Picture 1 (cartoon, rainbow, N blue to C red):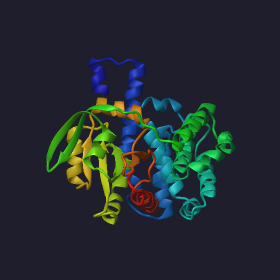
Picture 2 (picture 1 turned 180 degrees about the horizontal axis):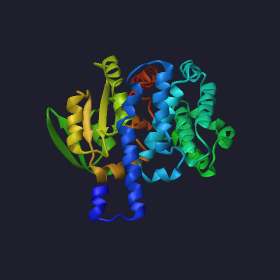
Picture 3 (picture 1 turned 45 degrees about the horizontal axis):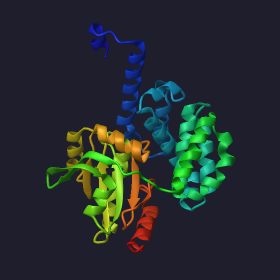
Picture 4 (picture 1 turned 90 degrees about the vertical axis):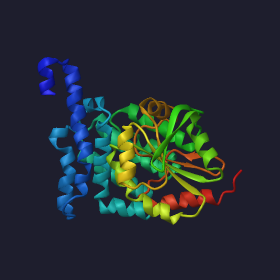
Length: 321
């Protein structure tokens, strides 16, 4: 960028944006670093704390100018909480309230009051709403955990959306499908209608990801076990790549030998679907029942294998309406 500026002077605001975007793109690229090397608690904790190094200015809310900053915060929040055995055990044993409060305390202690910290708390609570929508009734008691009242208001709206799923019909200009090394395109189709027409009477698990999303790629490592568990049953696993380069999508499918059905949306169609479905980031997981109705926009991740298995079995046992 320095070389470019010698002949193309940049506005300070533009320069600031590019620096932040580069910085948090680097954060995403090195996300796998946490899982490399020694597994000792102290060594791993040190690698996690790298992501709150002053270089990343984790409490500087101006970082939200780049879409990569929320991924940095989500990664740090996820790793920080996953290192606490008390919270992890409470979550595993179904003591959700204890796990929720314990995780919030960890976030509070690792960051100063800011919208950035609010985002991490929001992200963590949202995860519990996905697991148990009944947590909606407990939200008022958590209002004082937020620095900015607007974040809590948005959380309330998010909670309301978890109660019911109603998606508008959305015509996508081009839906690309990769099969046997070739790509076929379907024009001007609604995604869910296309999938349910192609896989009638099936339960569909839809993984929405991006090639550059570290958490997406990490979750893919858990997917084969779920696929094999439901082999031969009326379950279709669909991977939908968005906000990515098409060549990188094809390479990823090939290099990782991704199982399931492979779909892709271009940049314009990505923006349309994310806006229509209110998808805020990656990865996002949907479940569609046998009758073609989306039952949740917040399905369990592949790493949450037992919860995911229960949700899929529940839909399999439901007769097609």
